Image (cartoon, rainbow, N blue to C red; front, side, top):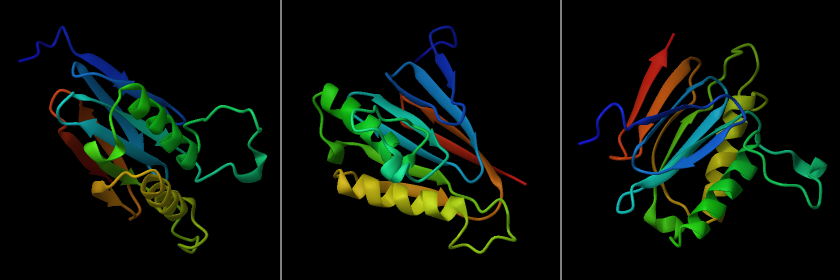
Length: 159
């Protein structure tokens, strides 16, 4: 059992990514942004990303590094950590949260939240990850907490 003194609490701001071990708790608050949570049940490692936009598209520098600001590049950050740990994408429990349409006057096909969600599914599948669960869409904010020692994830919907 972990003591509260040994837990590393990480609060992700928009555009951030964190990968850690079994003594870490990661938290974030989402609206139209997407959080991808990833956990390895045997090694008790994993992480979370908080992405604002689906992709940077053609604006990405050829030698540029991946940024968690973009959903597709956040998945690349996960892939790098998975490789570094000597594991495979299929070994992780992946959960997706967010993607709300926070401006209901905008039609869903033009809203950023649903586009973020679509990119997260596409990028994860392209790299061999399976989505274990998700809570996306709607119009409200979500508070997300991931404990890397257990893989438990909590989501609270805010009005």
